Image 1 (cartoon, rainbow, N blue to C red):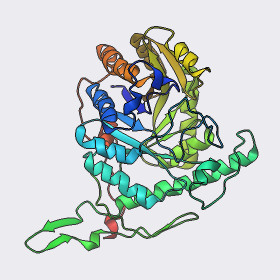
Image 2 (image 1 turned 60 degrees about the horizontal axis):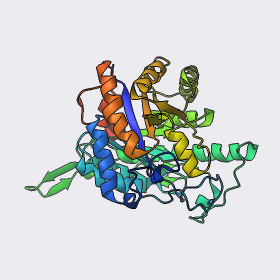
Image 3 (image 1 turned 135 degrees about the vertical axis):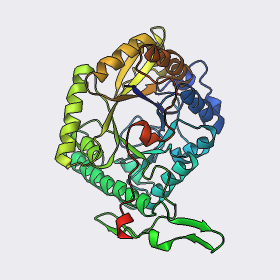
Image 4 (image 1 turned 180 degrees about the vertical axis):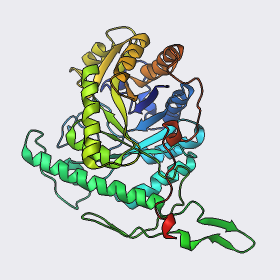
Length: 389
């Protein structure tokens, strides 16, 4: 069985000093050409998909406010628009942008991701991101969020409420994706009928946070429902993933922890009453490939030891292949790698790790499918409204 590999793209890489590394090209960070080079390289390496980070405020080392730092990358391009711009330049690799689900509207996100799926011909995914930070709420002025004390009960209740809101957000998006039947478009020039109005359905969603009439303005996309992925570190986000997602990115520290996390995720699925295909579990790893000492030199440039929420790997592609296969034996089905320095570590993945995995017979030598759901063995779901027509 082939291993699944995704890569998380962010700035110049996941180390805060990556933009100062040799070959980082910080002058091009906000150009389409920079991102096109990265995605084409990832597709050349036959990776499953790339993800694009996004947020509702400039990056900060603090949880509750901007940090005012001038020595790290700040600012980014809109993830959905960027992925849409890159779609025509690629043919096989999946494109998975992040969007906020706390201050944005599900209608807008639904048509953005569906449009990306049309532009990419069935290669779109989405990572919904809950925003609990008060300075992000301040950009919208609709509500005030409390300061974040990760150890306090207030923070847990706050995040739990936002995750419940996020569950409804994703449900609205999925219903809007279904609101056009697959054959709603007639396009018959002889009769002058472009669309069958009986096959466009109001979703009439009414919940605690959203009231959405529908239908969408965007016809049903090639995948029907683009792939939904989410990042989770603990019980509450595991529950969110079980209720909303096709893929969950988790952050175990080692193989034993990976087995424990898999057990916890499966328990969350059972508790949530999940039906349909089980979650695909991907482990996140931050990777520095090549000679030792690269991460330490970056820490010196940044003036502090970089701490990641994910396991940090340093070593050769062969050693990384050993680790991936060991973790896969713990029940992890794929990996999302976070390159420490993109210009170095992404090609090290595509030109070092991938050939090593191919030599071991655990990674594809060509793309078997064009659609992202099909790559994971997930069926194309029918519109839930077909029987109502």
